[in-house]
Image (cartoon, rainbow, N blue to C red; front, side):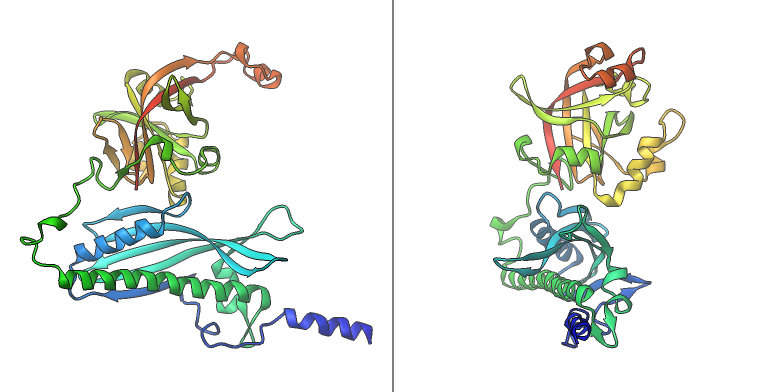
Amino acid sequence: MKPLFLLLSFLPVLLFAQTDEKYVAGAVPEENGKVVFSKSITAPSLSQSQLHHTLLEWTKKRFNNARSRLVYENAEKGEIAALGEDYLVFENNALSLDRSLMSYQLIVTCTGNTCTLSMQNIRYEYTVSYQREPERYAAEAWISDKAALHKGKLARLNGKFRIATIDYAAHLLDEAESAVAESTVAESILPPASENTGLQAETPSLLPGYRQIPADKIPGNIISMLSEDWALITAGNDASFNMMTAGWGGLGRLLDKPVAFCFIHPARYTYRFMEENDTFTLSFYAEAYREALQYCGSASGRDTDKVKGSGLSPITTPSGSMAFSEARMIIECRKLISQPFDAKVVTDEKIRDEWLGKQMHTMYIGEIIHVWMK
C-alpha cells in the first residue's frame, strides 16, 4: 500500500481543483502567438491630447522606480511606452515566501477620444530553493492555455502564475481606466480656460519629454546599469558628433563636485570628439533598445552613419550636448579631468602584463551638470 499512498499524495500538487471561469480557457488572450492583455478606454469629453496627457501622468506615477519606468512618449502620435517589473506573491507567511519577479511592457496608443493599453512581452524569474540561478519563463510558454491547462483545469505550478498574472493585468488596466474617469470628471467641472487662470499647463521643460533631477537622486545601481544594461557615451555637437557603447565607468564625488567617469580608447572614433569638446553625455536605455546599443558598440562612425544604422533620434540639450530621445536617463557632464592610462600604474599583475606595451584607455572625469529623466 505504501507505493500507492505515495502516488496519491503527489496528485494534489499536479492540478488545481478549482475551475473558476475567470482563469480557465480563453482567460489569457493571445495575439499572433503572443500573450497580450489589452483594454480600450473611450472618453468622449476628452481630446486625444487630454487623454494622452492623463495617461502620461498616470504612467509616470505608476512606473516610477529603479526598474519600472516610462521609456517613451510622443504627444503628437498619442503614444506611451513603459517597462514594468513587480513581484507576483503566491504565498507569504511566517514559514514561506513564494514569489516570482515579473517584467512586462505597457504600450498605450491614443487615437481621438479612445486609447488602447496593451500589457505584453511578459517574462518571469522564479527562484527555486535548490538552484543558484532563477528559472526564467516567457508567458507564451508558461501561462497560455496550451501550457497551463490540462483537461480544463489549471496545472499547479503554471496555474499560480496564470492566476496571479490575470489578476495583476486586470488591476493595472483598471487603474488606467480609473485615471481616465477621474480626468473626465475633473474636465466636466472645470471652468473654461479663460476663467481658470490658476490651472494653466506646466511650463515646458528645458529638454522636452524630460524632467531634471539632482545628481544625488540618480536611481539604480550604476554597476549593473553599466555591466548589464550598458550606456552610450556621446560627444560632439549638433554639427558633428559620435556615440559608442560604454560598459566601464561610474559615478561619485570629486573636488566637491558630483562626477561621472568613463574610459575611451584612443583608437575609437568617439575619442576625437571627447578631446575636442567640453561636454559629453552618458545615456541609459530600456531593454527594448539592446540591439541599437549593440550596433553602436560594433559599428564605427568613421565609415558609416551610426545614427541611421541605430535608428536612434538625436537631441541637443540646452547646453549643446548630444544625446538621444529614446534614452530613459541622460547624465550631462562637463569635462573636469582627462588622464591617459599607462600599464605601469596597474597594480594587478595579471592585468598589467596583459597591457604592457599596448596603448591603454583615457579616463574622462566629468562634473555632472544636468540629469534628465523621463
